[in-house]
View 1 (cartoon, rainbow, N blue to C red):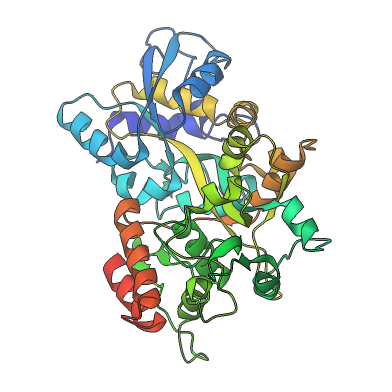
View 2 (cartoon, helix red, strand yellow):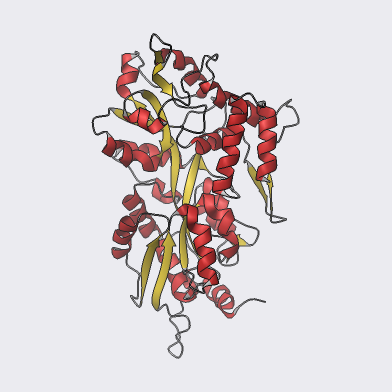
Length: 432
């Protein structure tokens, strides 16, 4: 049986459009002077994983309309988000809204209010947002309002490439493999003194799970498949296509592991080295695969590093460009203490003007197609905007647990305790 609040939403929603995107801002009805049940008032508590200072600046500059409510932002560690919510709900002190990365969607989706398609049509959502944002679509409606995306990109050392006479950096994985022997150097004891790229391990490769996710997604494998008709999810990581003898994801795992195999021509990394970001900052890695959000870290920690950025390496096949992306979205909790004001706040946060402001505040691409059309003078940001169109995530059942699953998958191959096919099979079983 629908609550009174849900009934209000469904009745009012269809009447008003907010900006080019949100068709459901009619939650707030100002037509009646006899009742204030639909007037947003009080304080809206917003939990989020974005930095406190940046979010405070963003919210302070945001026009919330009537001004009869305010938004109080509280930063939370993403790894503790689920547990913090459980404790808050048990203590009857939950937040109204939550701003979270897409990796944590599966863990908290049962606690989120789903906007019914009668209020915000699936067609409008798809037309408004980039394809990767469809992660938030469910059988019954929209689970969260996507705002920004943090795509995986390639940072590269321009000096090291020029020293090796590279006019342009390799753009495909195949070209990267060809370049490895030319860009990796060793000392008289056969120890790596410069690496083309840090791949092949899980312990000292930053973003190794994101990188593997991107490689799997580039094969056309969604890792976890969602069946909207039945509202069920199924792990498809180890799926073998009808015309294939082994899973493409197993071939990808072999490729990834080859970069830490001393007998392979791709060898350019090992567990004895510092982590990949540290090596890149020290000028000892030609390429570093990281998120767009890491740009400021790289600039701050080595202002003298002569680097540039490009989209992630691709397969070279005649398919669309694909990278991994972490999407930032806002959603209202089912148990929101102040639901009317919470929905008003979510509507305001997710309108195009404020998404654009948040994108500038956090220096990340927006997910709305119209906003991605804007000219970007910053050369790094222009690449991030282009990468956003290719960014996809997956329905991760538990980010912390799945990171261990991915690490075990890599270790099984690099240690020789199993082959790639068996490792992928075991990982699929554990994820399911």
